Length: 104
Image 1: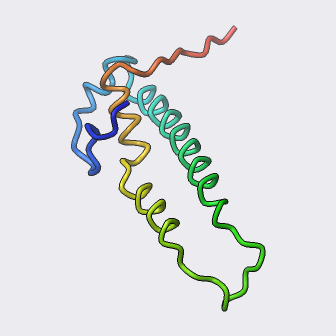
Image 2: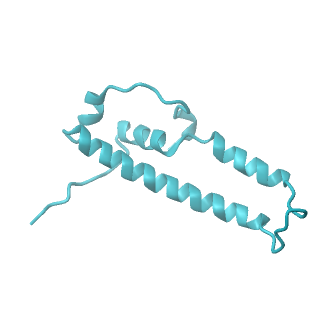
């Protein structure tokens, strides 16, 4: 999904339109929660992997210094839309697939 089209601020949404695909607002919220959690975990893994390159074996207060590349990477992730906003945009655009668990 193109993250440039996703707003970075929270916007007011009509809960009736969010409830339409599932028929229930609570089901919609669960779908959104689970997708936002998936996105957050993926971003966390990606960020951790990139920041591991800057890890040093010696961690004393005197040797800790700021690395410009590390700061730029962190700022990039801070500017990204929040996972819940990405999940809502995917849900509204019909890009999410979900299914109800069937109890037998």
